[in-house]
Image (tube, rainbow, N blue to C red):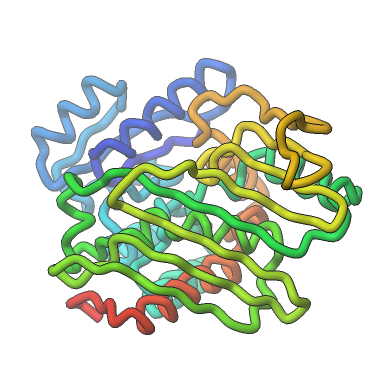
Length: 330
């Protein structure tokens, strides 16, 4: 049995708790063991409501518990690095919510520590682990849409009410919360041999980006046009265009259906539909990947290896630098 502890007791932590409960119910060897919050009262309420065995009023106590096998980091982006370092220094493997850290320098430091300790360090960017990813890859490799040349993806929600996203001291903004998904989608489809990355951002008066357009130009001539917004909902669709057809994915943030068409100009009735397997919550795939890694002694997950974690952070650093977005702790 793998005892999972959750560091942080917010909304996304509850989704992970639900995931672990459902995984255990279906027979997976995983247990929701502990939760930690800066408030013991909040941790105890979370444990009571979600079924965790232990509750801690400090992150240090959770990290020191010898019964913990894996720590899921569910705190703001600004705190991911220090929270992971705390756990790794106590001998605990970590699965950190996306974005992995606030910037590439932090990611390099955390991954170096994980490599020195020979401990798993993984990023919970759930779309990297979903089975539909391989299904889409197979369809493209089979030549169903010919040679792909161009893709688009957008992700937007009205998140103007979310206080942490407006705060630079918490590494707020749309890029690390939403833009990370469209960038990862482009990397999964077209790879990482990017010749040029560029973008434009709309910033709040606090200095964080809240809406952006991003373009990637690849050395082989492929191109990606991406958009993310924390101002408003968008279609969340992804399109991959080839010279013999195209493919539409219904949601870049949680793709459940891919439709293949003969032509983008007549995308009414799909030639073929790819359906994702039924999910528990969608988080189960990243947890399962970590369980496999722990079982084999691996320090990274092949679905999102350390090199890719660093690449995504460096892409986002470059974009923020071009927009003049800098966090106070940098």
